[in-house]
Length: 382
Image (cartoon, rainbow, N blue to C red; front, side):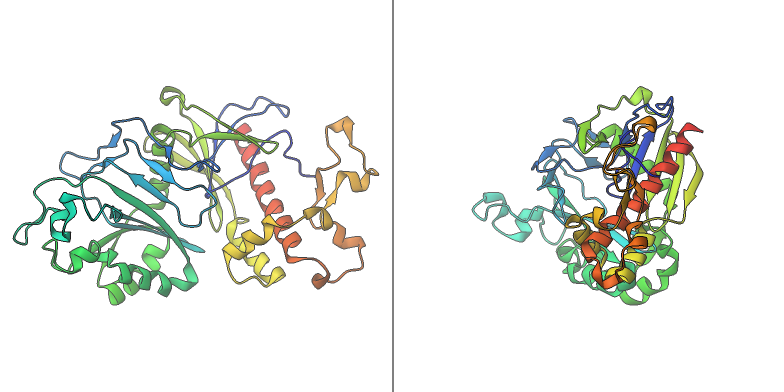
């Protein structure tokens, strides 16, 4: 039987982080820390003023002061506003997974007033004089996040080409920044697809993929989020979300659960110190694959949208179905606890088409995510 009333494990944005050592028994309620966007809040703070990421003195710096997510987590392609960004940073980076391609790119503000004296022309906006790079910093920019199905990688390539991201943006490709096109251009990439599709990127875009280790990027990114981004960590318990203030001095160790096509569980002991301790082949790819077969949906987004309108009680066998609508109090199981995913299909004289795709999608989603959460709990206790 599967119950998460006592232990919250709802994963979002492909990441669950569990603080190791917080669980002391079956009745304890440890926080599950997730990378998240705050629901319904527009333009929320992401980092304290003056916060920036320093890689080296010679490399461009990412300025997070007054950074904010635009819109809310329901939006399909959100952006992060960087109002004080002055350095030009890499315009494009990719994570090419087994199921999805995740793309992030940087752009300068496109909504400055046309009456602003500093932006009368494109050249003046960029601070260009006689074909040279700008001589003064132009503040502001955005980080954009887009995803594509890996099987539709040609759509991703067309998107990159249309925005000229592989050579620093349209302006650079048009020669406004004195760039020399995309000759010898390099794109940072991680994931198995960085190896699998390297030749395709070279042939189609004329760029090389500079491959970064997937786990190194994952851990570095999680550490960055927990240290630098306010309101990124929260507990999720019985449908209630509560933000957690992380203490940099008490951050490690923690268990990072990365939900992709499959699932990896990584014990993180510090910056650059980690080991994969477990995993499962039942992950996002399983949900998508079975969902596609059972509901005939055409995309991952469509499958998720179906689940939001579903009612798993029509197909899942609950504790209440077994005990006549009552709880099983002796062992702490409520009537609404799922006893068997898809269990009602055993006794009902129905065919697949008699069940709604929405209910199937939700039942499948809960079955897979609950089992990932159960394994996460067992690993963290161990």
